[in-house]
Length: 373
View (spheres, rainbow, N blue to C red):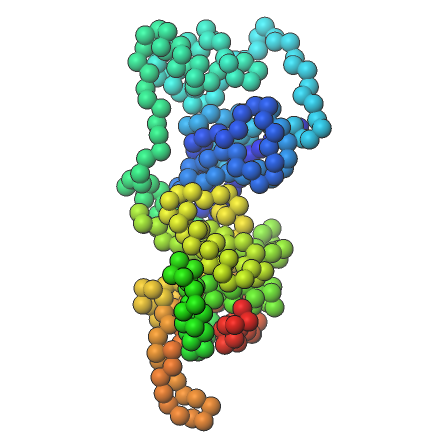
């Protein structure tokens, strides 16, 4: 038997509110299946389970606010059978979820007189509502998820502030910039998109993401996390994509296995990720798997991005706008060439400027051969 606990979905998450269960006791679940929806300070997240099993007991009710690491449910491993129920003791404490207890207190109901319909006789919200209806007490409406409010925006800013303050406090940043010629990438992209339907066209951002992922394969010290006083390299290349939210703030969910995917499906996944992010429909793996964040403010016209590393990650790659800038060619002739300024913010505990410069040089060279991405 094992416990399913509320996972940490980022350095800025300390607690979450259970919104919905998508499973029930006795149901068989499989690794990667969404079993619950939890509200964080930024969005409602679909929570996946990472082990096959059978749900034995749900320990939390919708509406419960729980700290990271709190047990949400107990499950039996495949092939395991439930232990025989222990005979109830005369002094056994009545089981009731925090949300049900709070509602019972609000309705002035004596919980010692209630019979629970939950696992092992636990009193649930439904039991409270039935008891209130029988007693003629007005039952408060169950709160439903609402549109973002000023309070949600404030919570989002506080979460971002906490993570960024931690970053500046703990991580010794260094910054490097590289001016990358983009004429070949632009020309290739125009030719490639001319043969594609509008809905399947590629954005420059997807070329940049793929180039970052391939550069990380060569320089893996930028792909991982710093925990317990040491660098822990990531097993795969999952890029966090910084996405601005319409209600304010930003979020950086993971785009998985970027180095291994062709550009077309990668573009589809990126578009889907942005859509679901802004609709508040992300999965827990997308919130916790990123090991490097990429931020692109080119559409805002900025020259360069000097980002703050999202702990416990050890690097952040930024892109400014692609624009025509003065350029001197190999023969010394001055002209104008489309370029982008790529930036690297890195953790000096893990890497140094020499390796960072090599990483940016590799990124530049990869973008000179877009057809090979």
